[in-house]
Amino acid sequence: MTESDARAWIEQRFGLEATARVARFAEQVIRESERQNLIARSTLDTIWSRHLLDSAQLIPLAGTIGADTRWLDIGSGAGFPGVIVALLTDARVTLVEPRRRRADFLAEALADAANAVVLTAKVEAISVEPQRIVTARAVAPVYDLFRATRHVADISTRYILPRGRSVHVELESARQGWHGLFHVEPSITDAESGILIAEKVRIR
Image (cartoon, rainbow, N blue to C red; front, top):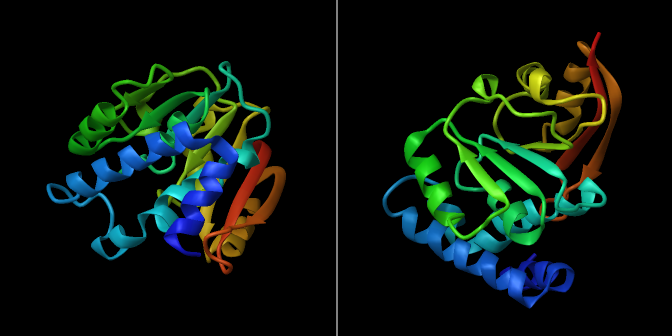
């Protein structure tokens, strides 16, 4: 997928104004990457397909989203997918990032977004009401993510977890310790990668 294809996908689904917000954020990420290692330098020229669209594709998997939708993004790092969700939807997005410099960058990037908050902490240390959506991109194995988020999730929580090419291995590992409804959605940015969807998760 080309960069123009990736931008067009977002524009068709979320509109010109929302896409412009995403474009401004992309510029912030590129500038900040000169000061701290937000994303691999090798992906700067493909930021729309490798990071922006890779994040935006998760939104349709969340179902109906409104201003009362609580969305938790763990280990937000450079803002993927948390910032993209906040820029493209009305969801109440909480971004959790333990590294101070990255959290400061996220807070600056979201300064004008009334629907987002950044917490500088590990997810195990936060206290929020149960979330309807939980995302985490390249943070920890699924088995460990379920354990770390038990206090911020309930039976109605939907996990949307980009897992790359290890998705089926991680799914089988998670099933060793957790009950739930699990399935894998294909990634539109990498034909060999998958996104694990988990609902009604509970410990065995």
